[in-house]
Length: 294
Image (cartoon, rainbow, N blue to C red; front, side, top):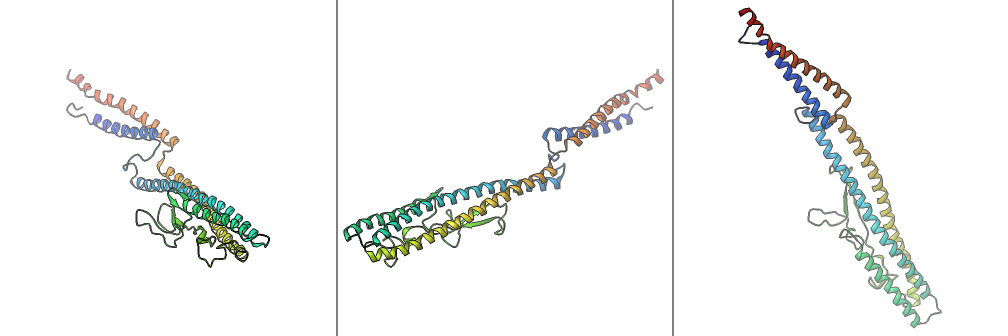
């Protein structure tokens, strides 16, 4: 028996410290719901988790970006629907002016409304914007995108992926110009345009062909926008599934298994209580030496 050194108590104290540390870890995991609360828990797992969390956040924002792009497309398509109404009215006026039952005075009255419709088409094209971005005045008709300045130019780049690969993370929205001059109707364009005027019977007959061409040009723009909207909707579905799968993967790496950890908690709790009891006994061992001295 020794009085100066109680190696039994020291050994039990070390065991108690280990059990208490494990109990603290289990308590932290159960209270936070995370298996990895610091790099010490799993350094590699922490690195993978943080990269996954960054991608998940980017994918969720990508979904919002794609939804914003759909709203932009719908804004442009709605304006083109109004332009379509104006073109239909212009063709109706051209048909009216093309017949010989009207004299020059009456045909000039028709011409006045015809040109007013053309002016309204240009006004709609110039005023249609989404968040300050003009959509139909040629602002997005450029073949080359340039985003190096404070204001991007050319076709609009919709970014939805977590990286910067043209195959996976973005594509472009290009919208043709829809002003009256671009469509070739009204006196705002070239005098050689077939739909320049309906002031004469011959010009009105030519305008019927020109307006048909304008309607086809406008319909091509709308068809392109419709295809882009469908593509964006499919992209959103894919992004949502991708984010969901990444979230599940991140959960398997980071989240605690409550059933397993609760078992560890109870085990460590019992071992800690047992070590405390044994430390009390070990501390009382040197007192037995006093019986021999006494």
